[in-house]
Image (cartoon, rainbow, N blue to C red):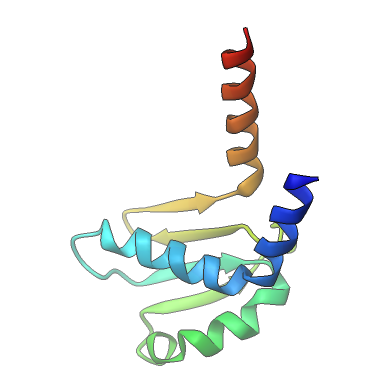
Length: 102
């Protein structure tokens, strides 16, 4: 039940989650490289509205991938990238819980 509640909240705040992840990813970089942000198709338009100045300056390009869940995202830049996939986090939590229970 708790996971369903969390997923519902994540869906409601999906754009904010992507913006937070984008901010976190760019803080780790020494420069501001041109970046591609890949999101679920339902997020492309609202996200684009939030980062319109960066899109106009061609610093960020938003593309879609319908295989991503609405709360997942990927960032690519010339030297690397980052992927935030909630299922990977949930799997890791399950692994930790299992290890603690042993």
